[in-house]
Amino acid sequence: LQYVAFHPIAGAGLGMDALALNEMRGELWKEVHNAYLQYAVDLGIPGFVMFVLLLRGTLQCARQAQQAAASGSEPNGEMFHLAEGIRISLIAFAIAALFHPVAYHFYFYYFAGLALAARAISVPARTAERP
Image (cartoon, rainbow, N blue to C red; front, top):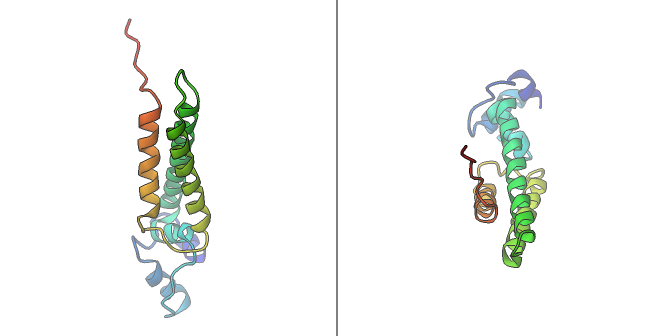
């Protein structure tokens, strides 16, 4: 947090958290202990906020897909359960990210893509009304 306080805008750079912390604490070569701090140290506060907004958006996409599958003229049980599984996986990642520096691993991005795809399949496209 001290490094983020001194470099709030730009951060250390992508994947440079260990080097930035060596600068602050001495040469221990240890990474930060969670993904959220890893984003904050590497990308600064704007990058951290963007990741949190991305996580929130993907959770909303999964919830919207789940709601669309449960409602409508033809409820789709399979899509409902798929969207629920995606949502639970995103929540599990959000909690696990508090304890492990997995900011740049593929786990989150797979489930984020699945959440977007589930919403695209479940939620009907809005058509603009033409006068």
